[in-house]
Length: 87
Image (cartoon, rainbow, N blue to C red; front, side, top):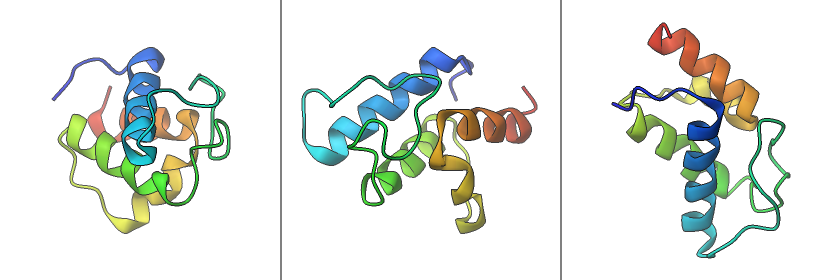
């Protein structure tokens, strides 16, 4: 499990997941602390699943369907990880 819960590390994970899900080398815009579904545009309902799975795998967390609402923004993901990992 990565020990890095920084915003930059989470943004990188999300960016990489979006690139993989959309089969692109770059995104329409950067993934930043302010990013959420729709910004960048590649973060849509289909690539959302890739983000959800990538975060779960990276932090070795068994995610439940009920956890999904936390994964609509970087801030939501950060808050979820802080709670779950007691960071």
